[in-house]
Image 1 (cartoon, rainbow, N blue to C red):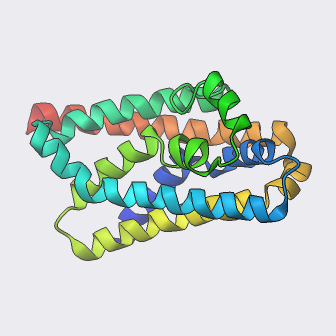
Image 2: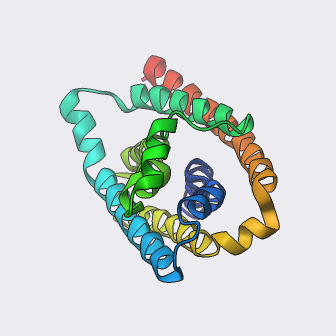
Length: 207
């Protein structure tokens, strides 16, 4: 069980990519008060956690209702994660998370907690696909499922801590440092995404 939870932690951490939140949060809250930054960080983390837990609880049932096999979703989810990994490796703005016009709109918003922080950056398509894939495999195992939700909570709490420390971390890392860490994470995510696809293909043809 510990091995499964650790594997999920690595995958989910890389997909959510908390490091990428540092320059994003610093840019969106530049010139704002500390109280505003704390409020946005806390609210966005709570909203993202709610989305993730809801998706973990009802996602598998939704697939069953739609007649979609988990193997098929593994292939689709793995493909999506692979696209995200390419964007991370080449340090490009992720079109799978948000578009440039959406980011420009976010810059003008007073409340940035739900969009774009909670969704699509923390609880984005890649994160939700990863949650659904894992939840589908461990559904019916309450202890493991509880550990799985605890891992989701831990990763999002890391996001919260990094957002609170974003102004100070940006002075240390800078944009280049954040991009380097993002590229290293992207390589790991690419390998994990390929494994999802391979497992999905194997499950489709050998089941």
